Length: 567
Image (cartoon, rainbow, N blue to C red; front, side, top):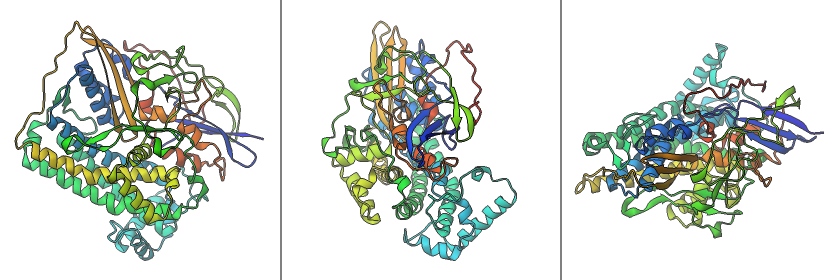
């Protein structure tokens, strides 16, 4: 007999996400539903506004990946107007993107996803001296992992626990059988969790140097950037480089070491050796290097065929709303996308927690649309990014991926797993950090002969314009689409990474990556579904980006009250 498991809200993410699954008599998941239960958005309020304001408005879509939307929206306008921005502007935008990736991925692994791998309670029983020796297995020069460091961390956390106020460590599934780190490994990772709180602040400061502030930078405009004095100041340039070195050092000696440790500890854990059941992947070109080259390649892989990677065709992107709380007669291309709400509510049924309102899997059940490429779901994100570049023969990516596989003894097939998805995010961070100085050096060389950072936009109010931008945000391929008429925005749509990954079943019954990733997963205890949370967190959900509606006149459309038990 099947049982319904409801997880609402999924915490340690951006936004509101509900996951429901059905398990059979062996606690194996046979059905899954992903739902964003609160809706918001920016696109509708852009209509009728000047395109020059797009960037500053759309970055408010999210409080995490603000810069990605800021840049993508601005570049969509530039694409529509047929503009080519100065080289210095491209370099500075890329350096800010480097800062964002380094910040975002560190925060994700340690402060959002880390507790899915690290059992904090277990760390309290570790031997700090033994743990210090364990850390040396994964790097020759551990960071924040000496015996004294680890003893101090252990005492600090014990004092925290003794207060009875566990904060971020409360209400977790400590002791779950799918935790595989030893107490000493848990203590090392816990020390890095705390160290990452310090490092992420430095990474945010990197963004602020050229962005003006963080998390909502303000130095990009249609036509270029405004951070001219920072670019021409040796002191500011050196400050960025010094902070970059500090953060990169943590990525190499901490983040990378912890992923290698996880690959060893979890390499035989069934709950992380699946989780990639949509074998289609898409990634956008990202990070400008010298001579017009990019660090990561664009492309699409279908059916897991790394030999068959092809270029992205923007015409083949459409969004389906069959099971989303919107109205549309057919899948819509983003240029013609609409955002018409059609909320249909929940269905009460029995669950492992008793009778609760649950998602109507046969009807509409999410505020996230279902993007499709040639009618097929695709996964986007760091794993897709690395797979596309690997398939393209990108030597930097090939060497880095092969290096990790050789070090851990894992086959390339291990990339197509939850463990592989988590490792791919670290590798993407490592590559972006280590190669980011190429962009920095290219900027230094270029400003010796060219200080241009801006060209004035030329927009004819009597002409109609259409344009889009595609880029790689920390969570995957991001695109913004704009129509301009009479000098103002006629229509605007964003297709964001979490929409690609979290969308509900489409009209053809095809699941998106979130839902498909859970099918076949066996739960140790359906009332404590750590395995589900670990898989979903591996995508780094950002639900605020993926939902779409707001009344531009400020009128109240509907009111929804959501509690953890779905009532």
